[in-house]
Image: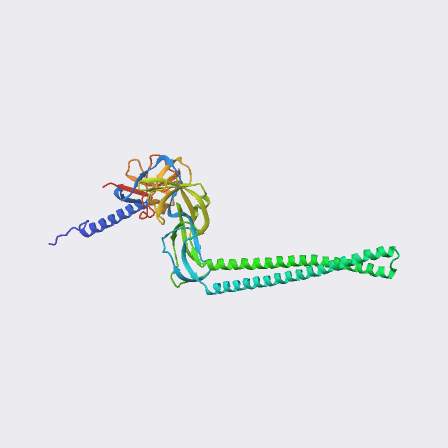
Length: 418
C-alpha cells in the first residue's frame, strides 16, 4: 500500500531565496540610512594637521624677494656712434673719475672736425684781411683830414687878413669875398671830413664786432665738434666699479646705445618685486625685515615704481642702521614687508585648506577629538604665518588646516587615531 509523503514547508531553496531578499533589504536600508545623513569620511590623524586658534599679536605682512643693488648707478651710453677700436679695462674693474674705458672710431665725425677747423682758419684769415683794410681806410681818411685841416687854417688866415684890409679900404670887395668863400668852403669840408672819420669809426667797430661774433660762433662749433670727437673715448663719469660692460673689439655701437654702468660703492639698496595686488597699499616709509647670518636687519621703502610689468611692480628699500657684513651686489634677500602696525587679533595658522575653501569655511574638531565638522568662517588680513579670524571661531578651537583636496563634498571627518 502506498504511503503519502508530506511536503516540506521550508525547502533549502526557499530558505536561500528568503535570506538573499533579506540581505538585499538590509543593504538598501543601510544605504538609505547612510545617505540620508551627513556625508562622512574616515581620516587618520597622522595624515592631517590640526591647529589651535589663539589670541596673539598680529601684523599684516607679505613675503617678498629683493636684490642687492648699489645705492647709485650711473649708466654709460655711447654719446657718439662708432666702431670699438680699443678697450682699456675689463668688466668689474674699479674706476676713477675720468679714467678711459674704451675708444671708438668714427671717420665721418673726424672728417667733420677737419672741415670745421678749416672753416675757422678761413674765417680768421678773412677777419685779418678785413681788419687790415679797415685800418688802411682809416689811415687814408686821417691823411685827408690832415690836408683839410691845413687848407682850413690857410683859408682862415687869409680871410682874417683880407677882412682887416677890407675894413681899412686897402682891398676891394671882390677880393675879400673870394677869401670869405674859400674860408666857408674849407670849414664845410672840415665838417664833412669829421663826419667821415666818425662814420668810419662806427662802421669799423660794427664790422669788427660782427666778425668777432662770427668767429666766436665758429669757434664754439669747433669746440663742440672737438668735444664730440673727444666723446669717442668713453670715460668713467664717477669713481666706482665698472659692471655690465657690453663692448667687444670691432663691434659697432650706435649713438645712445648702452655700453655698461658704473656702480657707486658708497652704499647699497634693495630692489624689491611686489605683486600688483598690493600697489594701493605700498608707499614710502613702510618697513621690512630679513635675517642674514643669524642676525635680523631692517629696511625702509624709499621709492615706489608704479609701472606694472608681468603682474608686479618694484620698490627701492634702504637699510636702517648697520649694513650686513658680507653682502654683495646681485645677492637675493627674502624680506618680510609689513603692511600694518602690530595689533591684538584672533590668529589661525596658515595651511593648505585655503586653496579649496577660499577661507569661507573650515573643519572644526569637536572637543572629544573624534570628529571634525564643517563650519563657516570669515577671515581678514593675513601674513606669512597667520590669517586674522573675523568671525566663526573662538580662542582654543582646534581646526584642520592641512589640504582638503581629497575630501570632495564631505561635511564631516571621522578622526581615527593610530
